[in-house]
Length: 459
Ligand SMILES: Nc1ncnc2c1ncn2[C@@H]1O[C@H](COP(=O)(O)OP(=O)(O)O)[C@@H](O)[C@H]1O
Ligand SMILES: [Mg+2]
Image (cartoon, rainbow, N blue to C red; front, side):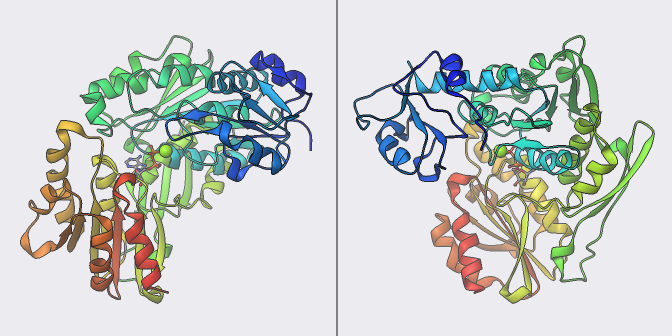
């Protein structure tokens, strides 16, 4: 395999010193998933210190390890010794970005980043070799890792950029130096840390000055924050918007009578610079349509063939935990797995999908939305209308979901439990043939427990 980084690249990029020369065919920060030939980077984080796993990584075939301490590593090991491994990872990412001659698309937004990243991977792959992070790698280590892993000869790279706190996006955006940046949406995720929607918009907008001259910003036309975002786009960068007005028609083809919910999707007719594109998305819901429009607009800005991209999007399926649908109860009921995360906007989006799914009864199984700070009680109670519109029955868990539980009509009440482990058996007992079951909550609410229980109960 050709080297991703030669020995010279590694020392040049990081200013580090090698105990013996080695090159790397890949990059790993996790000794459990190291591949032969990788550079293993010993990151020190709140959750653990990679230096303790250097020996294991080398034993699994890592070409060498990047460290900033040598006390915990085997004698004679191939090491790249740097001052700080996090900083050196960032330098490797910058090195990889500088030599990259393909186009980079960066994706940020309150919701829909990972889904849009995956749509871009699917769409752009039809036009040329495309690199994208394996998972939702959008933070101070995820972004440089994604860039460092970027094959120099790829045509396209897709980088997800996220935030929990103000100031996090700008340095990551500068590192990615995107040709095109997408802001998927501005909504109240992480309201607790950010205070207001305007503050959230300003933080997302901090991706925009990093767009390269001649590039483009792809912005959500229907966001009340659009003008705020526009103002942050530098001169020399085009502004492209996506939204409902681009659509010439969307037909969701589940009509409530067909239990084969797994084929439920959307037929989309959209307008791009005067050309009509028609394609089918195997993912129902307005939010999925919007993510697809953002994807096609970004591809268009890069000069990619959007007919090819649209055809490729027909093979897209929602990402695990983010709208993936699976049959349960021997195929007589449908699970809508949204267990990966939740905010007010994504709860509404998922409940709207629940309503579209063909079923004789719709069950919402919801866990707490976290990180909403002082807004928590209201954000939960405010979901009552969306639940009433979409669900026949509500099962809920967690202290904040109590506010929603208390706000919905009595005939919709299933059960409220302290946590997902306590809720799971009740949900399994309640679900029956003909149901569509939405399971959603923040990752910390561990709604995956309910998903696993439903799948186990289904055999
Ligand atoms: N454009 C969108 N608008 C609203 N909700 C969305 C959108 N795209 C995805 N979602 C919802 O948000 C959840 C998280 O999606 P994901 O793509 O992982 O976003 P992120 O990476 O920004 O956290 C999904 O489960 C889905 O319910
Ligand atoms: Mg994500």
